[in-house]
Length: 131
Image (tube, rainbow, N blue to C red):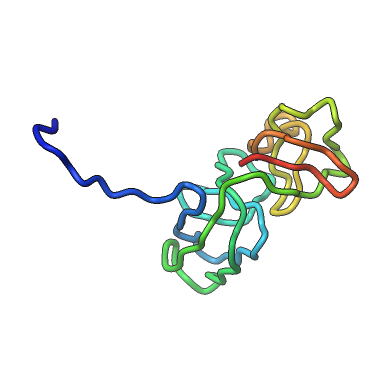
């Protein structure tokens, strides 16, 4: 409990560093998720936490978990719309789900996909997702 002023350190929450999972390459522009606390490109899996878009490419294919870090930006990004479980205009404002590191889907695939974020717009070029 404080009993005097404290200079509390801060970071911008727009762009954050995350430790990269072992044996992966994350490409700039990828939808980034955390698996057991380590960053990797989005994939069809459960228990992933979407954290944003990769601001750089990081190759940790030969490294141990946490050996490298990646800068990830939070915001609203345009990702590809699923061809098998397409997001429609009626889904705006709803949660969408991670299909891979560039694609989002309308449903959780009967419990097989993790949430990506909130659908903010749908257009022919893809889906605007807030992460």
